[in-house]
Length: 81
Image 1 (cartoon, rainbow, N blue to C red):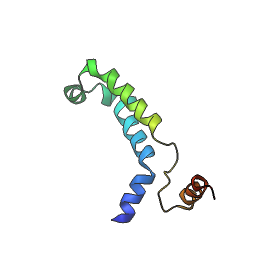
Image 2 (tube, rainbow, N blue to C red):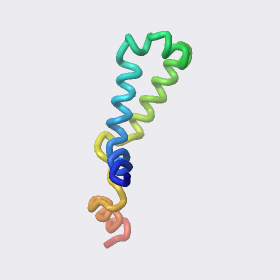
Image 3 (tube, helix red, strand yellow):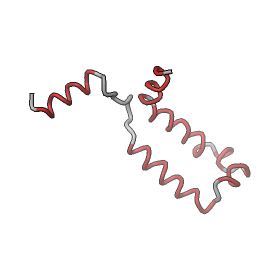
């Protein structure tokens, strides 16, 4: 189970991007009455803005976890060693 959470933490950007593509880029899905019932047309552009902001906030590469060697180097630099 720990491996699942580590994988999810590392690949969160890619997973979110795939979900956004499915929700926003496919017109058949985005204009479906089922989606419009959940996300009204007047809120769709705000959803798109929020999705882009979240995408910018997330990293475009696998995330560094606290026990990775890259994180240790960063901690040493901050400590001045």
